[in-house]
Amino acid sequence: MLLELSYVLSETIPVYPGSPEEAYRKHTRIADGDPSNTTVITHYLHNGSHVDAPFHFDKDGNGIDQVAIENYCFCAPLVIECPKERSGLIGLDDLNRNGAHLFESDILLFHTGYSAVRAEAARYADDFPALSYEAARFIREELPYVKAIAIDTLSIESAVQGPELDFPVHKMLLHHATSDKRPLVIYEDVNVAPILGRPVKAIWAFPLRLQGLDGSPITMVAEV
Image (cartoon, rainbow, N blue to C red):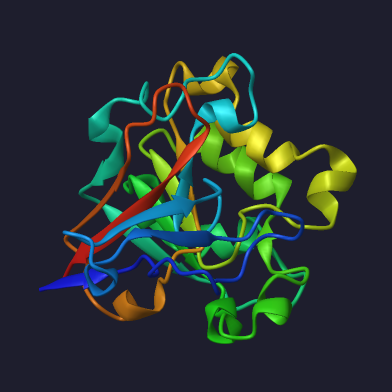
C-alpha cells in the first residue's frame, strides 16, 4: 500500500512567517471559449511540502538538481515520535530512545504532532516545534547512513531562534563542508501521521530538477 505524506498545494496553505503566499492565475479556460485549461502559478520554493538543497543556506552548496537522484529514495526509514508543544525542541533524548534503529536508518521522520493544528494557519506558523542544534550536529556527525530528515512543521529550525542565531541548524545539516562528503537534504511541512504505527518499507520524495536552485516542491510517498 502507498500512502502520501506530502500536502496538496493551494493558495490557502500555511506559510513560514514572512514568506510569499501562493498565487494561481488562470491563463486559458475552456469555459471561456479557449481550446484548453492552462494556469500560471507563482510558487515560493519553500512553501508547502518541500525539500531544501544545500544551496539554500550555503552559497557554495549544491543546487537541488546537483544532489544525486538516489539521495531522494529511502529503504530504511525511521519514524521518531517526539510530541512537542509550541516552541518545543527535539533533543538528543528524543533521538537516543530509538536505540540501534537510529544508526541503521537513511531517513528520520519527526512526528511532533504539530500537524494537528495545520488547518489553523496562524497557529501552525507561530513558533512551531523544531530540531535543536545539538540533535542536528549528532545527526550530521554520528549517523553516517542518514541521507535526509523530515518534519511535520513548517521548518526544521525554530522560527524564533533560527533568525536570531543565523540559522545554525540548517547550516550544520546543509553546509558543503559536510554535504560534499555525505549529501543530506531536509524535508519540511510533511504529514508523518499516516505512517504512525505502521511498518514502512520505503519512502520516495523526488524534487523537480530546478537547475541550481535552493529547493523544490515534492510528492512524498511511503510504502507500508
